[in-house]
Image (cartoon, rainbow, N blue to C red; front, side, top):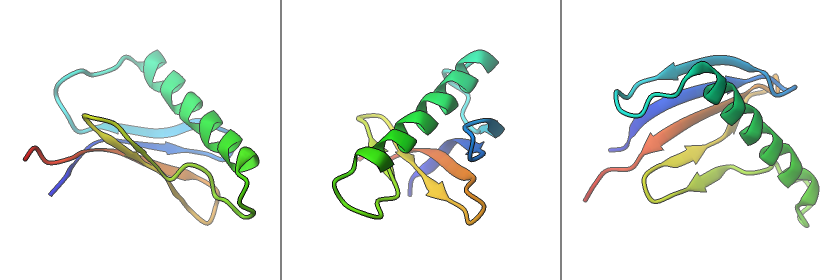
Length: 89
């Protein structure tokens, strides 16, 4: 079972509406959190436009060695982006 490390809710213009950190290690300051949310929103929007597949909804999952970053879009175009730490086997 994977644990949610942090949760970002970003509006359709890229502004950070809500941020909650559920972990205790490596906390970011407010400016870094805003920058990361803005960067992720920009990459998501650009990937929609550059995709060769019509109707692409952008980046849905970013997998790294230590975490997974998922993107869920709501019907109001707000993006919910939880950062998930996969279980260590």
